[in-house]
Length: 115
Image (cartoon, rainbow, N blue to C red; front, top):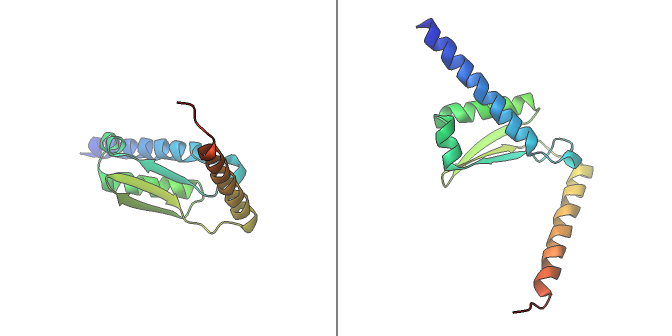
């Protein structure tokens, strides 16, 4: 039985490493590690294994990144979120980026379209 425990431990460690990599890749450098999030669809979850193991591995991966990690299952998707308090300057930067994106959308939606 110890060989099975070792195999399970290695699988779990690989899952943590994979999730950490996905979480790190989803970060925007300008936010200096804040506003982290990862959304795993039903197919991703099925491929990764038991939901409880994926959630536990996501929390461990988040801990490695310095996140205050929470997970939420909504409509078959697992949301992995960093809920740390965000410094004001980064919050302002993110708010400005969101406002600029909304402005671009608004301007594009008002342009006449050729049919």
